[in-house]
Length: 210
Image (cartoon, rainbow, N blue to C red; front, side):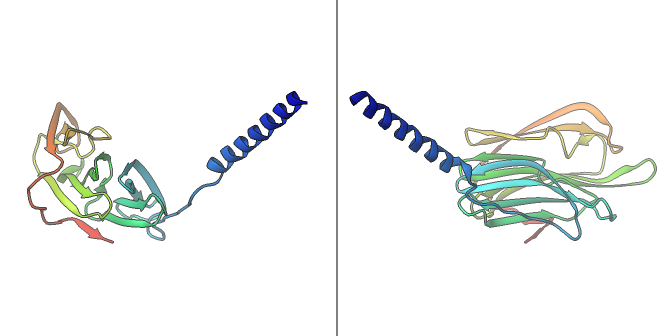
């Protein structure tokens, strides 16, 4: 009789644990969608990171049917509700990649990107700007930015390695050397920045805040 009671208790506990486990992970807490239609019908997500109470997603959008230049974007979602906390877009230049890299340092998110324009035959770059920005993760407040612009050769590619890294209140950015035709020069530049800078925020020159 005692053995049967023990087996019954074990079976009941096992069932409770299985049901509890299913309840913990079976249903999504929330589901959100975002779109850039009708102008852009293709979204590319480059990086995702979680900082403080915010999920940060960055990438770019383009149109496969209309001659619309690509546009880089950042979207920051509340991790508890999925609601948009803040968002940023980059809408200048023929090639935009505001979200090619993303890293988190405490409650600060640092985003890498840039834009370029070119003309001529063969194409020659007439502008190529690298962008590195630090935002307050939960509010989207711009803390600092570094803009590197060039119109000569050799210089640094907007893309470079796909990500940036941070440690010990430093963020590290790596860029490849290119010439005005976009050809790699065989050089590589590494830069280190202080994440929490005392420098006042620079003016926002390129973005349309949504």
